[in-house]
Length: 463
Image (cartoon, helix red, strand yellow):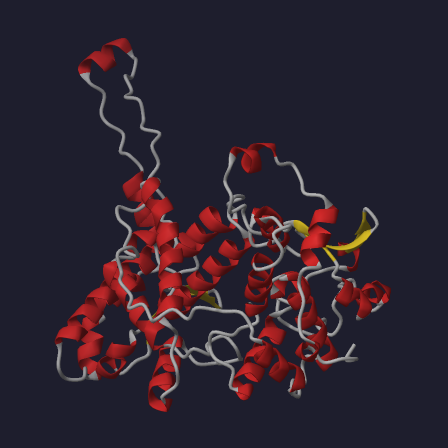
C-alpha cells in the first residue's frame, strides 16, 4: 500500500496474524525515498514481492526472528535508497536509443533508412483499488447492492494487506484473507475501532467472541471472485485465485409463519429500544402483517407512495433514484391496496406528516444508509428476549401472508398473490408470460382483504 507522508512515498504491508509473533511486527513500513508516484509504484511492487518471500521463509522457521535477522532479510531496501533524480536519469538513459553510425549505402545516398518504431506501450500496473473502480463501481449494469458490497470487501482486503497489483494476488494471498476473515469478530464494523484487522482477530480469539459466519466469509470471497473473472476475461491476470474455496455449510434455518400464540406474545411485550419509538415499531409490524411487504420496502416508502388509484388507497413500491434504492427484483415494483384494517388504524393520515418526506416516522435519526437497519436490530433483540425460535424473523410476516392467501378462498388466483408479494409468476404459461399486461386493482384489493388475524394479534392504539 502506498502512502504519501510529507513529500515522500512510503510502502506499508500488514504482517499476517500467524507470523506477527515470529517477525515481532504487525506491519512492515518503509520509505520509498521518492516524490515520484511512478517510481514509488515500481519500488512498491518489488517490495511486495520481497516481503512475500520473507513471509514464506518465516512460515518455515520455528523460532522468533531476531532484529538482526529481520534486517538481513529486508536487504531489498538497498535499491530503494537510490536518489529519485538518479533513478530517473538512469531510466531516461536506458530508454533513449543510441544513434547508430551510418552504413556505407546511407553515406552515399545521404538518406537514413529508419525502422518503424513500435507504438506498443508497456502495460501499466493495475492496482486492486483501480480494478474495483473500473470494473465494478463504474459498471452501469452492476446493482447498487453489488457495488456497495464489493466496495466493502475490497476495503477489508486493502485494510489487511494493502493495495496491491492484481497480478500479484495469488492463492496464498486469497487463503490468508480467507483465514483472517474467519477469525474476525462477527460485530466487525458495527462500532468505531482503531485496531488493525489482525488485532481484531486476536481480540476475538482472546475474548472468545463469535466470529464471522462461513456464509459471510463465502460472500466476501465470491465478490472478489466475480471481479477476478472479469480480469481473467480481459487477460489482465492469468487465473482466478478466489474460486474453488470450500466452506462448511451450517444447517439452514427455515423461516416459517407466525402462530396466533406468538403474535399474541409479540403484541403483549414491552418495547425497550431508545433508538426506535414504540409507535413506529407497532406501525411497521402492522403494515407488514397486512401487506406482506419486506422491512426495507416499508421503511423506504415516501408520502407520494401512498396514492388513490381507481378510488382505492394503495401503497406503491418503486425505485427511488435520488436515494439509490430500488426493489429487490423487477417484480418487486408493484401496487398494493391498503387493507381496511390499516385504514381503520389511521395509516392514511401519515401523509399529513410534515417533518419528513418518508411515510414512516421515527426512523429519520438513524445514521444507517438502510432506514430499516436500526429497527431490524431492535426487533432481533426483542425476539431473543421473548424466547421466540430462530425460525421466526421479521420476514416471517411475508410467510404468514403468503400462507394465509394460499389457504384462502378459491376465488383468489395464484398469480394475484404473486403480484401482491412481488414474486415472479409461479405459473409460467404463455398467457401469464406474454399476454398478461396487468391485474386490476379490484382483484388485488380482494386478495389483500383475505388477510385476517385474531383480535389479540396486535396492540391497539399505539399510533
